[in-house]
Length: 256
Length: 320
View (cartoon, rainbow over the protein chains, first blue to last red):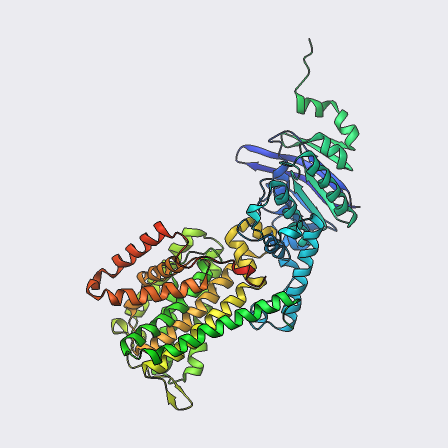
């Protein structure tokens, strides 16, 4: 049973085809990695799924046939797709707690009047948001920084905060764009634990990385992209032995 | 039961206490100095503080640059002028109707423009709206043409007419405090968080599930609602309104108040409103060079205190 299905997906920026006729499916409750050299189109695939850039052609199907093409960003999030960014995009001037609180937006519904008069349901909702935010901060280990500005956190902590913020949107599919970049090996180990726990919550994980070791340690399934095309797909062990993958990463062997 | 623990509770009380103290001091001021000239400037400060706080909501908390705030001020004033002189409605009806009409016009304008325009392009569109409204006021007889509207009757509460500067002082003060408290409540809620997220990064706000168009339009029309209230108060206080008051220069003066007073701080906007109301009167001789004085104040502030006179405080964390 798949949670996301991509059919003939193509994205062209002018003459440059960033994603070229891709077909793949993401099985429910797995950790799936998209790997590939720089410029392979990995982040573009994420932007297409999350609705940041519109697809040129093809379709993206979520769960039981919900077509995501042409849906607004907030609508896609509400359906249950969350993500983080390669170049960390936190609300830098807000505190750690506020960042996570904002993540709760689409799962809460206080309006202008109930906020203005602070009616009972709004006050209760705010208390729930606070409690849930603290729960997510505890999960990623950032509780003690709740009142710090996001921009003052270390790079690894910023990545963890992005994960907490994305979890707050209560996704069923969570996409991580290079979650381990800028992390040392200890932090990477902790991150692997964290992502495995997220999987245990019943959340499907789709992640981008170009660290082979990281991908091998964490993935159930690997999709390899090169020049916008899928060149290999399968379990992490078999994909890494694939000749085309080795060529894409290391260049063609010289045959004399 | 407002808060989940004692720490927040005690803080809430101290905030309330501080607020009440400030209100008490402001309420006593007219007894210390009953100079009518001073009172007049104080009333104008209250009215302008409503405008600057609502503009701050747009500029500092939603990241929308608007050059049309004076236009919404004008809609409130003209609605009051027409409803009171031509229809003779009481102010209990006029102030909410004026504010609602202003908010609805802003809502329709926002719905049309935010879909297509961003940043400075939106600012130019809002300027155009102001110019269009001004030329309608000038050229349509119904709005009194270049003469404006005269003889707006003073508001009355239970037979007590609000006509003296002293009574207007308290009348405007109540509305100014209402604006401060209500905007602060909105900013501290889910709505305010969505606005600030849009200010920080629109794409990420969208990824957080925030309907960007809806919340921009909401912010714009709520700000216009307050501008409409300020317009009503202004019309009642001055008795006379003219289209020349609500031009883009007024919008720029309002932006100056927000920038000089302090960004990301509602109290700063009030201080800004006071500075730009009192200072030109103190420097009366400059007369027509008013905008130059504004420019110099703005320049000096931006150079030496880029964040404004009142330091920005962490608004959304205020409760923690």
